[in-house]
Image (cartoon, rainbow, N blue to C red; front, top):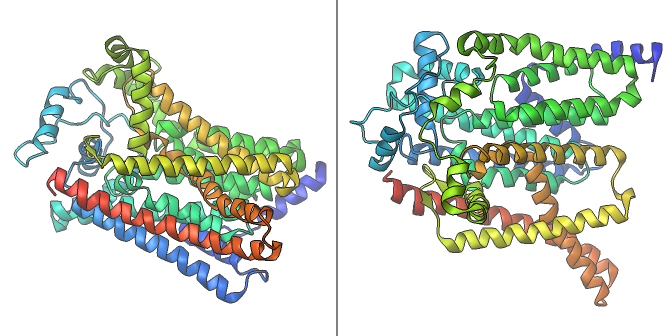
Length: 502
């Protein structure tokens, strides 16, 4: 598409209306796809009911974790709270200074269980973070202020739960975009995100993690829309705003957001024309720089030495935090790698408090077996797609490649941070939850297809095997979802509450 045709397409797309509420927009968008003539009305109602149940039950789980987990007993929560309180009370942004990471005091207060007589005020090592979450948190802080500290604290935790609920709707919408004919796959991916115990715990705490995950997911959704049908002018501007908000939310999501948006725009360029591509690139990244540039200019003035991300200041402040070089010198490279993999796995699923609350080893074994089983089936699915490329469209291949790219960039950020400091925390992979959830759902629901194929080869009628597969898919989804709901409750009431004294 070139010349006047491209300009006509651009101008006509500009006139498309843009809803103002993203959550409502996503709900309406996903609902409209379910209302296609190909889906019977009873099934459409069932899908809506199951999705609503997944989101509703997640909110109840989030409420339980938010109320039952003692104050400050999630990683970095005091530092995030102090940032929110500083912005709300001083109406300006803080500066990270020496002494804001009191290592010895932090270890002492953690060991004591954060008793009321020990103040969290000195714990301020998150003061270098980009400001977007803390601006919204400050608004919640001030609104809930007249209700007292306890209500204020709970409101901030529940704000994270709300962001997590929106994340579920975005994840469902993304999977429906990529696999519009498989509603169970979308529900399974959504249920996966909604029931990871560690994710439920972290999204029921005061931190900027869930907002970062939501920003990445929204960017993925718009990038997939660009690959599928192309973005209108207003939607392209929205992508630019999302890139800006990512830059103002968390530095660990810079690479996946910027690179994935660049990939989507570049791939669609062949269909839309070079002029349209250049306009969109300028609109997305120019708008992103316009909206977020003030923050980096401020950091440059405050921290100097071209420290626009405040990373140099952070590294100079967090003295006492164990470094990877020290760990390797003490334990050896092999033991360090083993520790990195083992702890990352456990803390992706369920390692609570300040990494001090582990669940029963048999539950970790169950999670390892489940993960291996799903991974094997996912690899089988990939092999099947490689052998029969016609099973997925060109657009779906690009969408899956984009999801893979996001995962690889997030995993690389996790690994690179651990090259400097010992931070073997699997929760750092949560910005890639949507790609991980898609892979999990594909693997989970591939097993029924494999069983159907095996049944046919053993002599069963093809018609019976065909009828068996949907039943097995539904059974696999129900078993997985109900099992993980039980696991969430077990983690909270048999491990977190007893060990943390809630």
